[in-house]
Amino acid sequence: MEREAREATDRADAVTGTTRRRLLAAGGAAAVVGLAGCAGIDTDLITGSGPAEFDAEAATVADATLSETGYELVDVSEDVRTESFEVADQTREVEVTSHFAEYDRAVEILGERFQAAVFVAFSTPQIEVLGRTFNPVGDMSSEDLAEMVQSRYDGVEDLERRSEYETTVAGSQSRVVQYDARADLAESGVTVDLVLHVADPVAVGGDFVVGIGAYPEAVGDGDAVRALLNGIEHPEA
Image 1 (spheres, rainbow, N blue to C red):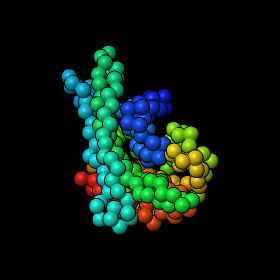
Image 2: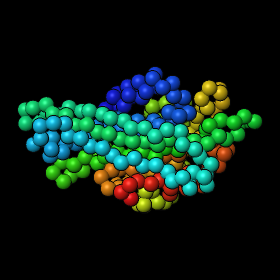
Image 3: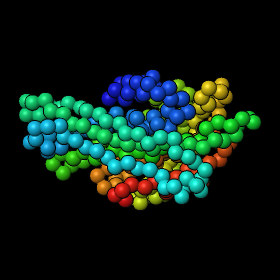
Image 4: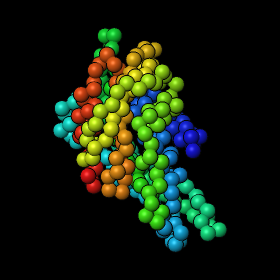
């Protein structure tokens, strides 16, 4: 599964020319998307004739919160994955659609401005078999998610846990863990101390919703990231 997530990220980078700065935000989403399709089998897959389809509702940040924090929308995207499973001696397919919304804002570092403060909200469907939820993101800790970001990008190093706090994400309580790291700013040659905020996944309707924020420590954008987490909206919240 790790290889599939890495290959998917490489393909996206080759097609879009996305910078490492944006990949830091989108990478958590891409990795979770890669896991989502490997999770479980719905009863429709056993009894139906076509692919079993799972489509998450998009999680986004409220416009009022964006105005308050100075962050701007970069992109809202969906990722569709199809996985094959062997069921009752037959090969059947599961199609999983996940969504992620990416935001950023420019910050000044060493007299220059970079789009270095990033935030991503993403949602992936819960998959059920006979009433039991199967989706790795639902059981992943903030440590797992933060390590996922680190493992995908050479520019993020020395990840260390700092502290944690409780806040509201998409209408539900979530634990948020802060991490320190070192990272290279894309296309700049500048290495900075980075702070990551990683929210535990929350179940909202039929989906899991996650928020991740990252910014240079010198910027001190912690309050803005908390506001962005609080501002995540989901149609079923």
